Image (tube, rainbow, N blue to C red; front, side, top):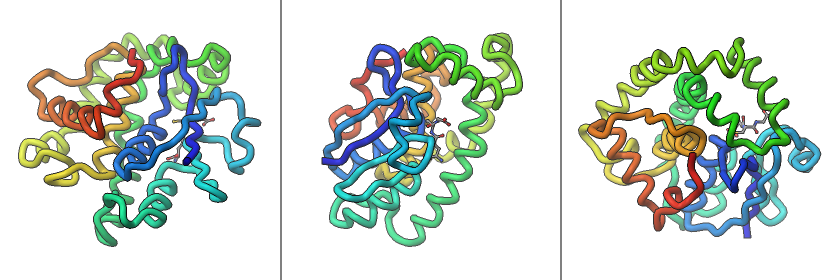
Length: 227
Ligand SMILES: N[C@@H](CCC(=O)N[C@@H](CS)C(=O)NCC(=O)O)C(=O)O
């Protein structure tokens, strides 16, 4: 069975944004996995990977770190299972989309989620998490609360092209979901696990899409501890 190393949250929460991409990719491929939650500050626990971040998978003898590389590994190693990319062009386009999401969507969501998420991480990680996030944000975690409404507006504008797409087709990838859907979903699931703040209005096409993703693979992502 594949082992997935991911972040350990309080109350059994799985709060690693990038690991949600891997979780959904594994579910999409129909691959069983065993979760190994590790505190964010425990770098010794993941030293075998040669890096300092999760997700990491161990698939037999193979260790792969980085959610994008893991998706590529799963697509290459399990070609008979449902495709994540839909061929070579889809693979290249999805890589572009992954970089866009990491550089645009994730930073736009961070100030919305981070203060509440702090209360839901493993308590042993408090100092580590605060130092890292305050380094990214260049402000105290608590200062993000006052600016949250503006940050939600900014995130909404970032999501606007996706909203337009989802008015015309049910999934980011078209008629059926695949990895690009999970890239976007990872941000919403991170928010769902990390904060009670609602990012979307009920009539937003993105809200209906999120419900469709939550229903996938026997409601795999719906039935987890949330904020
Ligand atoms: N590009 C990497 C990013 C991974 C990443 O930043 N993971 C976070 C958790 S979601 C992490 O392990 N952070 C711990 C740290 O930076 O020390 C990927 O896609 O896997």
